[in-house]
Amino acid sequence: MIYYVEDDDSIRDLMVYALTAAGFEAVGFSDSIPFWKQMKEKMPDLVILDIMLPGEDGIDILKKLRNSPITADIPVIMATAKGTEYDKVIGLDFGADDYLVKPFGMLEMISRIKSVLRRCGSKTNEAKLFAGPVVMDMNSHSVYLDGREISLTLKEFDLLKLFMQNPGLVFTRDQLVGVVWDMDFSGETRTVDVHIGTLRTKLGVAGDLIRTIRGVGYKLEVPDEQ
Image 1 (cartoon, rainbow, N blue to C red):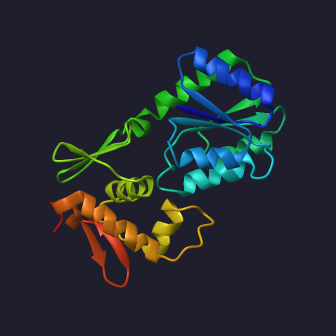
Image 2: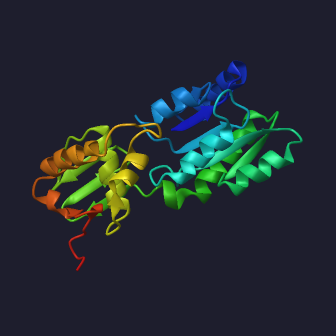
Image 3: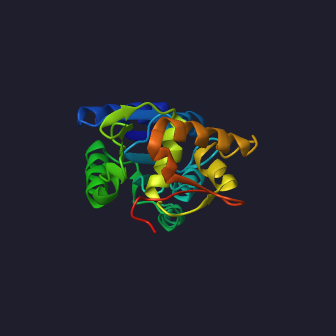
């Protein structure tokens, strides 16, 4: 799945069509608001960001993607206007994987996408995570306990994914709110405790893997950890 953020309707529609014709799944967004909304529903394999966007620009979106453990490894290609060397440098400095200079052709775009996906394959193909009897398949957004699929809400899934990607690392409640919930989430950290409780319940005996660190927060303790 490729997400394309571009405020020019004609360019966006043409490129999404080209991506679909090339065999990719693709969704276009006119600005950051629908993009972030969709990011909560499904993670893409690659993002193409125009730098000049209304409201939150492409560089700001890139920074947020790279600053979150959940989205840090998603490949990003920046689209820059011709002659804006500064934008290219800034984008690459903040973690963009490649850039396209407007106006660019459909074949060039598809070639760049395939190249980036090959280079980043080790990250994007990290399809499964394991913790004792728990297996998470990130491609299908599924979690299994002893081979049986269990149903998690989006936030429960994101919490478990963060823990399984960082076994043994302690997260404070504030950190969990900042990573798993919206940047502007203003609720109390009690929300984290409630979600941890329901996640533990759904994981059954494996719920004990999520340890409470008194006065600090939570961590995932893998079975062979001493």
